[in-house]
Image 1: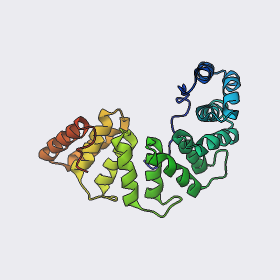
Image 2: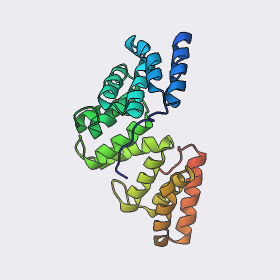
Image 3: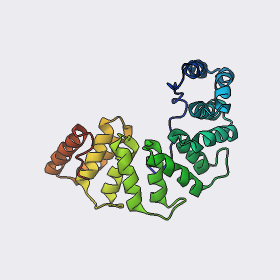
Image 4: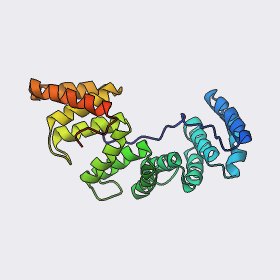
Length: 233
């Protein structure tokens, strides 16, 4: 599961509460965007973006990125929002540096932006930062640091991070090998809608006793019911 994700592309056209006029304009842009009328969306967003409106800048980036496929222009607007501290823009700019879309590929630069977003709690950036540390991309390989970021993402309900933690416990990668915890995380990711969770869980089941399976199921229930505070961390 060592792959990267963007932070909610095409889904985060956000209505601002800072000013009624801005909210109305972004509302119009949102409707135009979802109708596939990207020119109309930009007509509403660009005046606000040029005035420094951070959500408008981010949404211009989304429109160029996911709507028009103009990655260089998307990166320009993500950068403007990212430099104002917007975590979604930071995460997406990191992804662009990671993939080399619209900017020269630069894994160290990707880590820089992922870290800024992850420290603000952006779950996609946390997961992607875990991938970077696990693989040693843009940073010295540090599996313990990878586990730290996967855990933070898992605590927010991220199914990719949860299933990755399961895999790491299954193989003993960065953590003590533990089939019970592996099964627990696979079960949690499955409950949360990750299609591969049930497949991974089934693969590990023959290696476990009935008692271990019951323990893992109980631990998964406890983890979920405690809102990820009691997961055998």
